[in-house]
Amino acid sequence: MNKTFLLTGGNIGDRRKNLDTATALIQKEIGNIIKSSGIYETAAWGITNQASFYNQIHLVESELSAEDILQNILKIEAIMGRVRTIKNAARIIDIDILFFNEEIINKPNLIVPHPEISNRRFVLMPLSELAPGMIHPVLNKTTDELLQNCKDPLDVTYLR
Image 1 (cartoon, rainbow, N blue to C red):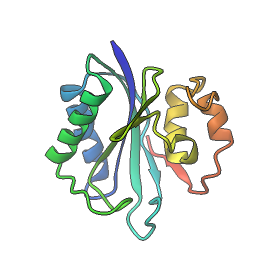
Image 2: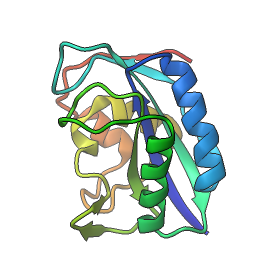
Image 3: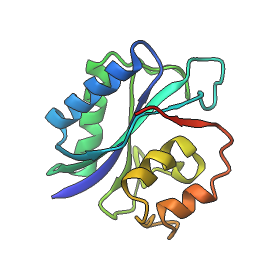
């Protein structure tokens, strides 16, 4: 059984309801959610003149390959009405594969671990909640060490 950490987030519409919908669809289309972080609110990254994001991370057990998980993520995003425009634009939902087992994957359409984990406090805070001692297979640092060294200035607020 494969274990993957998935980051969900969005800033359009009812953000909490959208995270709940994404959670249900992940459970249906990808695999069993073992545990989930709390929900965190963060100012928009990149394009800053938009609503703040709600984010949550799920640890999921799945029989699917990383590539199949990615295809199901794209399906879930489409079901929920995501329209891809420009990078960092507002979106109803975004789902990213952060880790897949302890594998390092470098393909044109899929890079795992996600290359921006260490640069984003809104990823590291919920990840640290779920797996503080997990070692990043490329950077060889724990989640907590990455969080302590993160230079991201955006405030991240724990909601629940």
